[in-house]
View 1: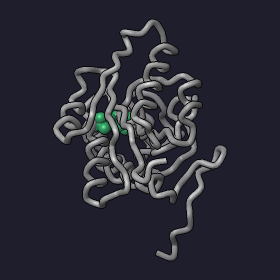
View 2: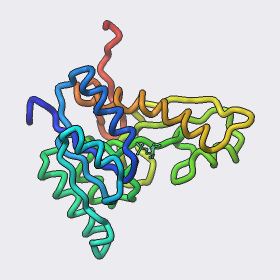
View 3: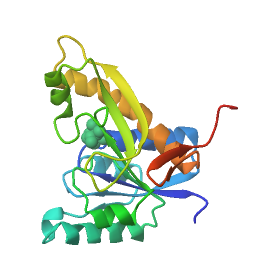
View 4: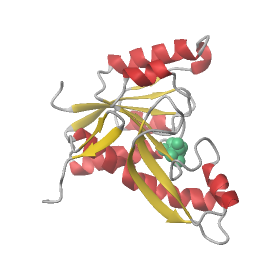
Length: 208
Ligand code: GRF
């Protein structure tokens, strides 16, 4: 195990959660480094952000692989190459195979833009508006083979307002994502939070 924890971040798009993690890591001087950012899309704009920060990037186009198993095998080999202690899914729009999830069990995190277990899947903000819920939000969780499911590490709630649009609500949730995801990653890096079977354990920090 490295003294500096090695984080590999997987993205498919703009990577604002990745950026929030990069920013907190630098500002708070975590004992960690981003070993690589990997995308399944060459067009992901977050790749440029990572490169500009001097972080190694890699593109693995899922279309280049015959099936999900083959892609996930290549992806897990790429992550292992960078000796990841922690794998952070940050807008990575791929369903992962059970084999992949199992390989990274306890060190694979995701953020989902809803208060799970409500609204797994896509279009969560529209789903929340359509359902008429008064509270919506975001969830950081350990990944299990079930999509958008798994032991919950952190959640943040935002109000759904009378005349909300999908875009307004998404922006309000995203602000919260940028708060809770870096915090959760830091807590895991520092050993304050961990997965124990199917429960999240937290070291008592009430004395701080
Ligand atoms: C976020 O809302 C995340 O929760 C969802 O996809 C979006 C990714 O945004 N899974 P970004 O790429 O981190 O900016």
